[in-house]
Image 1 (cartoon, rainbow, N blue to C red):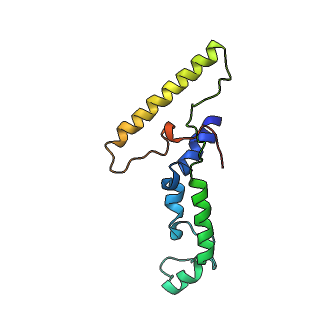
Image 2: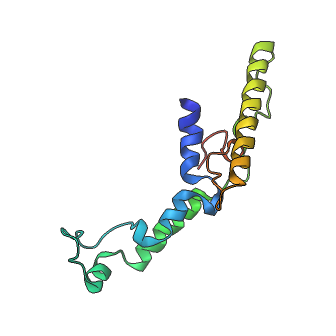
Image 3: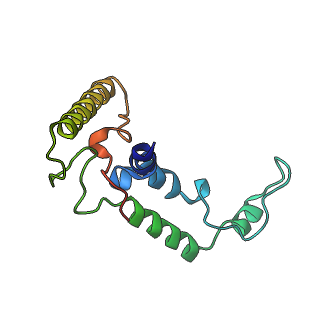
Length: 138
């Protein structure tokens, strides 16, 4: 659970740099308004263009949230994919065997995702283990 919450779950929102789903959704302000200057309408069909424009955030507010999303979605320069351990912390055979098995399973999952993506019109790579960071970093 810790690995998924700290890696996979976060990656499902932010992975892929500027093409991550969080930025894909939030960069178009009507999908993800950072604030509202008026309450939302209480009934369908009662909104006019004027009331809509009076409700959505000002340009400066929108630019701040888009910038924040951009910063959160950028990949850090020292990124390491899930299962990558450049420092050797374990010298015993059993932990090394388990790490190798984990890395092998991640490779298998990644290959399955890449194979499936070949048949999709738009590939889904947000949970590809090679796209998920080994740790959360902001």
